[in-house]
Length: 335
Image (tube, rainbow, N blue to C red):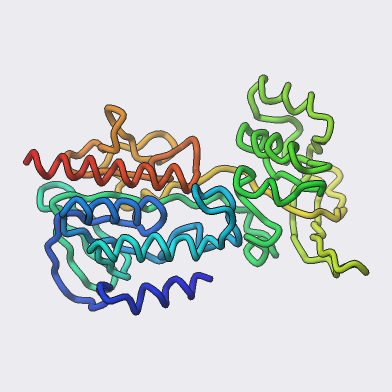
């Protein structure tokens, strides 16, 4: 699916692909997920020369999912198709894109200077950072192969797909508890697998878990492998997961047949490029000020998961991208 969106971007008339060039733009947007392309749409429509620098994943995390059902106005569509439409809409209004990866950002003075791995230099009067975040994964066999097809990192997105099924949740914190409660509305059975001997979730969340009749918690267990189980006579497919007891004395192995695996062990914001330059919180998210998308440097804005430590939703990222473009517009018109 990611190849499909790259192909569309590569052949669109306003796409920029030539490296080793210096460009001057009004707004440079780093990242091409829902936040980045929504910012690109609004930046261009507000009359600014706007450049979206796509990075390694044009379209963002939505291109790694299968079907989505919670994008406003669309009942059901593939994530890659939604992002193709958003990118095409932004470019039809004049937004340009550069299929390169920013590796250096000088935000010490305006115009800000961005340099890409491919050798391009971009100077911008305003910068919007929309580099997103990546869910923490376990790094076990079968995890990557089944992402979007039995393995998920978002129950709000995918829970309805597991109606009357058995899903497991990996993790013991508030995020994992929230995932389990979301799934419990639809699934027949939800099993939380916790590496330690107790939940780390808040007392209130633990009470909710205890009161849910279809949620079971297993402690001292680690997920080690995810594989596809052969289809049964009715053609139903499922997953088989390999577990190991995390108790140092026992270390016994077992397996489970499940319909879905939800990994809820946190997110990693993509902010390494801005450490020591922008103000970040203790988790590495970009700090925003005055209920805007403004960062600690005037003229630099952030949107989406790179600054969002709470929601991690594509629709919210898109809205923040729009807000960032409007903030950038107001900044440019005031300077």
